[in-house]
Length: 204
Length: 204
Image (cartoon, rainbow over the protein chains, first blue to last red):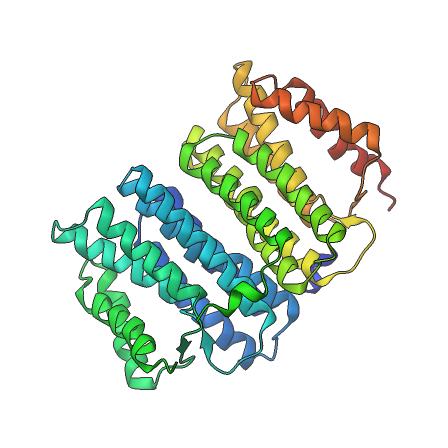
């Protein structure tokens, strides 16, 4: 009656935790759940490789959960906080670009990422918005600009490194933790640096 | 700079219209956009076959857009209209079951659907909720029941026919149109009949 149980592995449960936090971000209107989703999104790949449970089903599920946590959730939240037509259009652009990015990633087999990965785009958009809100400099237009800008980066051909070096990962992890208690500045810097890194390293 | 243009086909644009309406349902809190998404979801398959543009990219994009329009949108809307913890849990169950259903569909190659298809589950949940609201008989518990019930059907092994016969399609199309002007009863009947059809035809 429920044969699907036979194909779900331990790493798929980690992916499900990712979508749960993504949906919580939407239902409870809180950017911070998206940062937690990013951690579980990184973990599911690690768990899949360590437990030898990499599967086509897992890859499919991953893309499906990523569009919720990193596509719909940021797009929804910016519209929730800046209820205007221009932000509605920008959030659509972000979501569509994210969906295209995920579908392309699903059919390519590459060493590096082509185009800004959707979790990074979500992180960038969310942390910039949160930080701008904190300093009272956020507006419909600035948020729309960052949504469209990160959307364009996702569907671009710019190369992004897949696995940052360990010291950077430690700084990034700490920045995520700090962002949960509303200290968003370190995460803001990490996101900006990663986005710019790809742009300035891009050849042709 | 944007090589992704080379892989996007005409049917993928139809899929993008599906996700746009799904996101509008979320942002503007309106079930009816989900019904329009269902029409475009059916159309993209037809267009892909007619124009010979069936592709792995298109299939990936389709799953990614479906989880937004038929997973997140209904789950979000029931929580929006029935803001309670039990509905929050039920909407999570619905979304997770939908994500699992889509990931399984993505790796199977079958003539019939195994498990209630996610657009049908979304239609069922939305039209039952809308109709119950209209008659003043909706409650946190009834909505949660239908969300969990349709979630379980999605991950079950129950067979559902893929292409209903033409007369039924015409009735269904008309019911969709009527639901847009708030006459939800015919669509309510279609949804209930399709859901029950699978259950009563199920062997073992």
